[in-house]
Image: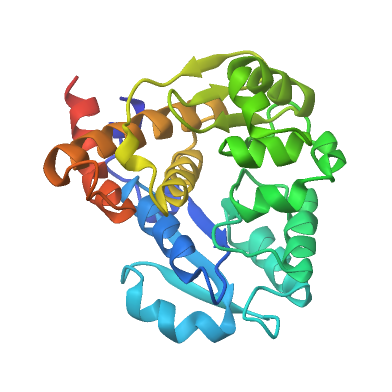
Length: 284
């Protein structure tokens, strides 16, 4: 496994600083799950860009190693567009990879913020959850990306349907075809989640076989976005990062299900099993 080969003189800066932009009063845990998964997947540094009003609560539940970056918020406790410049400057000066969307919510101000950040990010990026919903009807933003830009989108079938303006059943009937076409049309890597998750970019595609129905639980997708970001931060290309992450995410879920059962498994159980999944791959 390529990621296991670390230089003896390496330092934390060599493995990427991940900025996760998300969280809201209702969905405070999503960004925390993403951050924890990024750390367990090898990221050197992780910062949570969250609404300022959540900072004290998040400090109590986040891993001790994760930093926070309190940001302007709306009256409802979601990220406000007024924080755009502050986030943009952090991305420019400190972040190596940006995750946009976990727990962001659907306030107009938050969606506008997400769209502006996606359009001008200029760094490797993972767009997930409400970051994807903010793009619905605004796919012209993606047309600015060039080949090799290292941008990964991670929709589940419902989010994919919203992006395409169609129904979920139509997406499920043509999963592979739609994923490949979308990736090619917009020069991105697309991860279409679900049973046998599909990873596609402009040239390659991969059908994943790990994972189980117990992973259909709140926060599982947030875990995956953090894992992809960590692998991007360690220098992998978008397709390779997404492929590794999807496989290990499913394998960690299979290990967790064997211990907890599919019924009782929760997203944090998947995070707990990432090290074991990585070790299995390293020894294979």
